[in-house]
Length: 359
Image 1 (cartoon, rainbow, N blue to C red):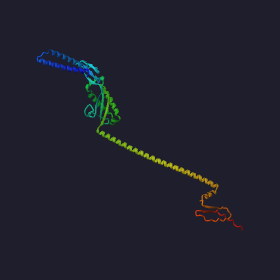
Image 2: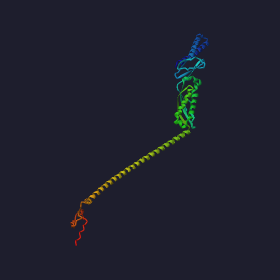
Image 3: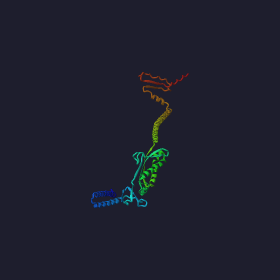
Image 4: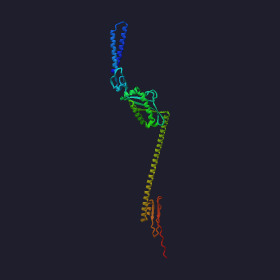
């Protein structure tokens, strides 16, 4: 409680005492008693009440979050040109009075929810987009009174600045800015740009009327039921398209994987076939070289083949060699019987014809 409030309380009490003394004096007079002392008390109490009332009417305490506009009957314009700053101030009693304005930040909300805004019920802003779709905008305006313009604000709007200035001004600006964008831009790609435009325009208009805009909050954007249903169907279709695209991509990956596996198998088969062909080529080349060596050996040693043939015979075979140029007939040795597992081979050279007898 400040000094001005204390003086107002004392002034009120002094008037109560004055009335009480006055009533007491009247009762005493009506009963024929002497009232010389009572009259003095009434006069003293009355004078004290007048003084306290006058002083309390002249003392004004301005809170730190307030500014005062002095309405004066003695001023040429009907008001003081400078507002009252915070603290204990003096005005001329009975000729001046003070209108207080808050300079702290205030919020004006317009919402579709019934109990969120300054007005009951749906107070959202209905607006039309550039392509004709209807949207409903919820918004909050955070502002304060410009201390340098509090007197002009009082002259122009007095205490009606929130309902008669901020509300219609903001609703009109929001509708104008929204109409410049398509519906899909309002809630997606151009929402930040749209909010900035609204904030700039609203701040400029409020400054012209003695108010400072601190922030414009675009709380929510609601669409008509028909458009909301179409947006939902579009989102479902996009999700299905994304799912189909994912499935196609998955199938492509599977096909690519199968192709790579088949390519790997084919490359492996080619490499294996090339290895086999190379091995066969090397073997054939080796065999060719061996045959060449054998052929060269046979050219120089014709009997080498016969020797190899005899060497490779089974060990149980007995062989007799006869020269093919022997001029004599030799009796073959008696072939004695041998064990069944053994065998004898007689190699007879080509017989040489005997010379014919001389006549």
